[in-house]
Length: 220
Ligand SMILES: [Zn+2]
Image 1 (cartoon, protein in one colour):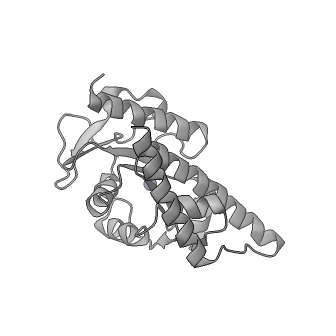
Image 2 (tube, protein in one colour):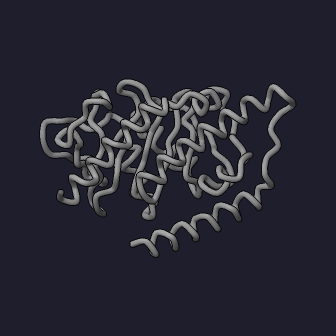
């Protein structure tokens, strides 16, 4: 299997896993992987996750938004492209409409780091990007700002964006975000969540990122 097809298959598998975990439904949300410095591969517009084929995944130029072929990329492709442009270490982006993170995005509250694995994977907190029309340039700008130095952000009244150095990491980020969002909401019923000290959360994240890279190198 050629490299590009291998990545397309990873996108399809991630879509099925997201569907299975209830993090996306029907055609909502989208997934991309960086192919090289110029291009990303992304899920098509308006297609269901459970019948995607390799030929449905679209290669889009990160800088110009141009794509070849008849199949249109997800309408939210600009969001993905902007993240690849701004974050050279990031190779995968998942945009979900996951339930608990969406609830917090509606309340428009910052989710502090309240769980160890959340701090390790995502960073000091998860901020809500200010509301703007979906697929607008304004929304892209707001999300890029909200996710700075972090691996996830929420989008006001919309959903979440989770990123990773590979697709597996982005997928785990979306799962851990969902778990933390749920814990944050439920803790409010019993007096409220206590956050991990901010500096400690930042330290946990830095350590995790360093270790992860070292482990990945060892297994290459
Ligand atoms: Zn969306």
